[in-house]
Image (cartoon, rainbow, N blue to C red):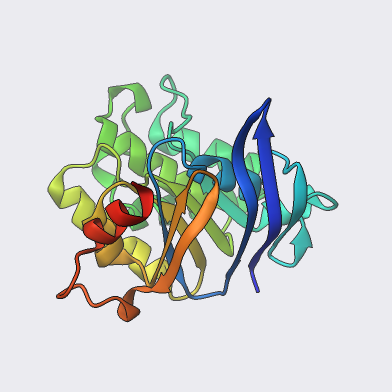
Length: 234
């Protein structure tokens, strides 16, 4: 199982961000993580990506306990945070080649940068500085960086944020295709995103998982996903 979360809790001072959360995600599944602001989505993603330690519980990513073998776990993980950190003064191709070398790709960095540039549809913008790009294209650069080292597990926090309708369609198709060979966990506030991309829906509210079902198990003709979400988080 590429991602296993067992009884994970996280506190910020006296505020509970996650409370006894357990979750298993197999390879080949695209899981949509939904929840209101402050529900614990980003906290869970940061813990899975190794950027934040859990207070209690066990997290195993790609076969490695993230508390005991954090570097090994992170080598097989691609993480796109909600606020995409990029260097605005670097050119797109230059930036991706640099990130590839930092991730240990060595001489393969140049070739791999070209591959992810094509994969994420940023070929027309590859010779521009990142600071000159629209928000949507900067988001694509962040996704390209996430894919550079060919990770087994992808953790994507609001991956289509800032994209126009055409770009959203392209990124949806890309994420669906990545889901065939990867484990993908993505968060979003857009219900259509989940229906379009995800094979499973997990809703988190007040630090607890309150819903976890395959997308196909929900009869959206009888009750919309938005109605289910409102019932569970009200």
